Image (cartoon, rainbow, N blue to C red; front, top):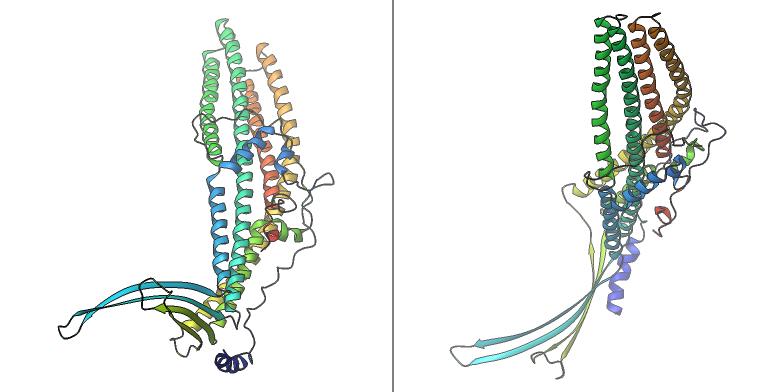
Length: 470
């Protein structure tokens, strides 16, 4: 041991004259605005962990729970987290010595110059140990990179979860909206058929022409034709919703039939800077940047000398699988120094790659932050304007309904021709259909705002990657 100390100590004194290599500190987040340009209103509330419950639909909550339990994309993201956890264990293992035990036994037979065969037995057991001194922090940097990758994978899982929940809500609302539009179309078909009966009666009595009859029959057929694409879209959206829930489309259905019974929550966006801790995609980008920074440090450390310590102890015997007859003991301890001298620029190329990758992720992070700000602003603007548009459109529908009623009275009395009632009927149908689409757009804007904010105001307890102990 004293000989080993005399060998290793001078080397350590020489190498510790330098300093450990570290990467550059990750770039800070882009400067955030003090407030959002769009306002959510004074009655807006901070998102809760189960923010989808604010829409007031128990069926939606049950669908989201089913999706979280069976969606394939979420299961894939969970497996990626497990893979990242295993990579952390692999990286952490480089910080500890490696021990191995070797045991062997053999029998040799030799014959010299045609003489008798001579038998020789041998057995040995050796315990070996090796340890790489992490003088420049290369292994520690690799462990830090793996831990950052683990955090990123956990945030990616949260991103998938948030996208899934928002996708289920949007698909569910679209199914209900299409059903509402179908109900409007069927109601207008019923109105058109009643008007057709009036026209047929007037034709029989000589008060209307065959042209009026043909026009109204064409109107009835037009409404019937408009039902078919809406029915197809409703079925296709329902099938897409089933896939999000991890179910086969066959036999799947949603109970609700319209969006009119849903609440449209007003969401308080908070400060723009909170997006950095709310949105899992931004947290993932930041974790990837930290991993890249650690990779730069590891690549730089690879340019510097490395020290490895090795040791072994063992027993050897001339008896087959028997160490009771005075076996021979052996002990070996060694140290080695490795300094790259020429590798054709491979190591320096790896440093350049890691450094460029870090700069790339800095810009990726900045871009993600800017996109997040734009997402919130767009959702706030859409929510405020679709709410005002819905109020105006409700008045349009009411006036169109009054106009159709008056046109029907005047037509029966012979004061107006059929074109007037046809125009009033078409106006009412278009106004009602537009109102259904505006209500869907308002719900989608609310879902979009929840998604843009990262769901709730905090990571759900128990799934917060920053509190995972890594």
